[in-house]
Image (cartoon, rainbow, N blue to C red):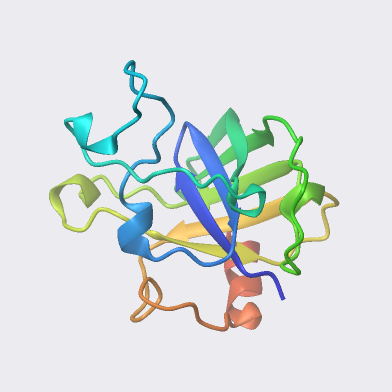
Length: 166
């Protein structure tokens, strides 16, 4: 089974990371820079960031935004993200690698009131697909326990969701 963490920053990027990372860790933005000083002390930053791992297995696969289409008939947005680069080497984990995924499709029913609610995060549900090299994701309201701990997903309900979008 795939034990991955999937993070969608709608309109920007999708990240797939091997292993499960708790939601409270993923809420912190990843550090993508070094301090100008020689000693890279994270306490010198004025904001809280998630340190990157130097372990090659924990390096995220990043897919950048490529296209978006809004289906006004059923009020569903479809966005496409393409793999930035795939030079991940040196991982010896037995966790399946996302290296065969070159494209991610994200389906979402927009909620204009989401900005007025807390927390503003949604959950990602990976849907079954026949498309080679493609991951299809349904982004929507989180179900109870979905963020806190990984759950076995009911693919029968996902298939029903997929037909609603496609």
